[in-house]
Image 1 (cartoon, rainbow, N blue to C red):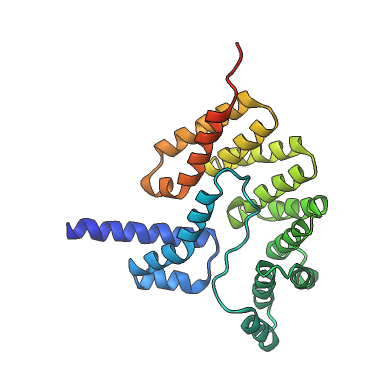
Image 2: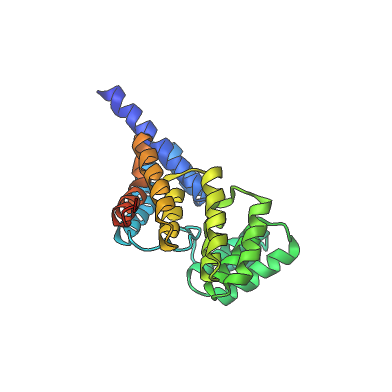
Length: 252
């Protein structure tokens, strides 16, 4: 029994470590998860992972909001002090994201722009600028920046720019382009989350047969996945099932 519990603790810690990598969490989380195994993993789950799952569950029927980097760390004031003391690109970007999350979009955009001038191929800077444009409702302008991020790093932030790009097209009334992006995404990264989002967009476009096919695949993928992946994708598969149940039957 002790060996089984130990293996479960290690597996859970690995799951949390991978999740921390996926969301580019603050560095101290990696240390906590590794050194305080499995307690560090449980801390990450309850402080970072669980609130996200609860939010997703509470808003299960809504179109996914544009994702943003989760930051649990220093205050804006301390980050400003860090930039003054050591004006590195990394410190400036940390401050820019903190300001963005605090809805101080204009200040955030100015920092991202300055960083972009120093390195116009920095995907983090370009992504930050795109997010600021989206937050200001400038979706057509944001699309160009999201495309640039994907061209620089196709897996940047675990494919979030692909979702942002499709959202930008939807907000610009370019549904076909949004569907094209999502179609490419489910080929490149055929995840339950991505297929569910594609299925929703297809259903919203009145393409019920295609939506039914994609959502059925999403549910099948979930059922064939591991326990840990199922925990990650529970809210998404619930959305897929609700969407599938709500589709009009095929007319023969």
